[in-house]
Length: 317
Image (cartoon, one colour):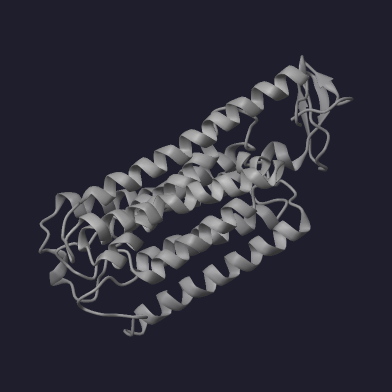
């Protein structure tokens, strides 16, 4: 975003906050360019950068351990009768975490490479969803050494990739439509639904296939949670940070709404659903209602905040 005093060339105001040795000829004039014009490097505050690096290092080490265990024929926490973390899930998370760190750490990391790696993961998981949806359920059980990423896990990864793509293309903008916040929140829903499945003993919420190994394992839920935390920490422009930092009451209200998404369905299921039920129950709709409520609340708060900012004539750059 351009700042006051930035040079104007051909009617375009150029942002001079980033440093670069590059020069190109534009509109018949020599125009000094910055890495940000060709790359998506955006400096991050040191504490956030270190915390994000630590989280991604932990996630990367875990993903490498899962991949190595599959290669050696000894998958971590493997059971033939319950969900296990797929090597494809581990590979997806490894690529995503490595791409994020490269984007944050290296000033000359090309945007096109970020887009390519993120697109690779997104396309792979979308293909996995299609394969599981269109092929006979018994087919994959005939491959004892192959476990695909479950549909629920793939949905979460696709949403994370969608978030990463728009972050790689532009900074989170000042807008009432807080797309970035919404994508991160929605990406957590499959993991939350699977946690509900474990607590209630309902296999439907675990996305269990005809092959019982295809589903969201506890290890996958932890890894997806780590990725989400790192995504939030690494983006100080999210509306959520602005909202939480405004007051203690904001933090309390959001915490209650967020926790309610998972506690209310559990209580409803324990009170109204039979034990060890299989298939969707009323708790699913309670959870979805909680998600919609939380997202609607954030959208309304963002709209109010943007209107107040506009009325005061304050624009963040």
